[in-house]
Length: 548
Image 1: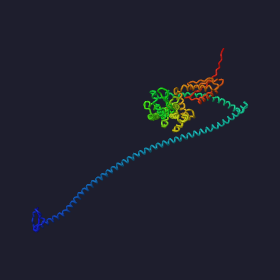
Image 2: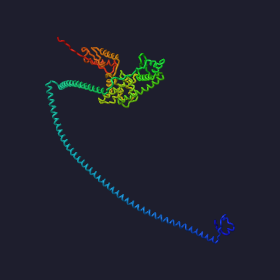
Image 3: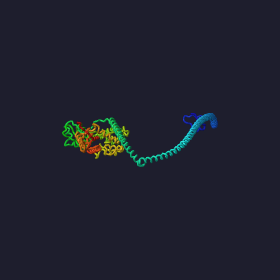
Image 4: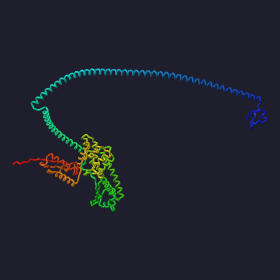
């Protein structure tokens, strides 16, 4: 390491000399020159820095001015181009606007021409109409003048005719020796007799024609309705007898001290009759639904083999659920088959209960379906409300579903149920009037009553025991024979018609009509029968002579 220092510093022992440094000795003059040179260089560097900075500033300024000038030139060129493009677009827009204005002007002129031509045509038509009206007014004025003249002439002729009539009437009064009032009364009396006779003949002919036409039309409607409703002739009945695999099963059903049979009767509300009938148990009860529940539960218990009170309760509960499900399904199926909508769910359940209800051996639900189809078919033939007729026909025996639970006839019960579930007033009237208890207020109600009679009276629809059948025939003949003047009575057509032969010397034609009406009333009051019974009174006069 070389250190420059003065001699005086070296002598004293300068601390700048470190270990290992080698001193370089110089004189004071040399040292002064070196310092002056350093000062000069320092001053020169201080003066050169502002000059360099100023030069750099000038250079950057010149460069910036050059860039700005070029940018201004480019901007000016682009501005001029934009102005040129704007002028071009402006000229194009002006040309397009001029073309559009020209087109609109042409269109407007064309419309003006068309409107003008139309106005001219209208003016010509109005002028022609005015001319035609003027001509018609002139013609009417001429006709009015002619009518005035004719009225004057007619008045003169009328006055002359009245004078002649007065004169002729005076001469007739002299010849006939009758006054004007007497002649008028005589003439009116003769005319009245002739008119009454002709009117009676005409009324009789019209009544006969109407009766024949009505019978013919009614037969056609009923025939078509029956053909369109091809129902089975044999109706299903409710089973009330349960078969057993053997007689030992009776003891198991009774159980120890009768606990099984008591449990079954208590849970189902029916009577179980176990007698000497081989391999059979009879179920007795007024409620057909309970009887069906008991039958299903008993059959399942017999198949299962485990018969005790707990098992009986379980089986009865399952049978009740099954029967309720079957009732709902049968009601929905009946409504679907008839094609009725918006039926109350409670009414659907009541319809399903009719599946287990019979009347004279005829299943009530099938009978209701048959009545609905018959009423709908006849309504279609007559051109009345088909859906109303079907709805009323399906619900006409609704009261039979609960007639064993509620007092009163099934007609009033059904009408009350229909009112309760807000059925149509016409449907309620059809239900209440299908047995003639009240007057029918619509054609559909009459058709429901007719369909009910057809369904009940057709062959094979209902059945009754032989004993009841014979008693009904005997009662019919007894009622017919109880009237004075009756000679012979015959019950025919399986009890659906009774023919009464009267003595002609004791009963005349008017009395025969009265006897038929009285017999009909007694039959209605004293007998119960399905359908209708025809009462025919026959009066015959015979003149017999023998040639000898």
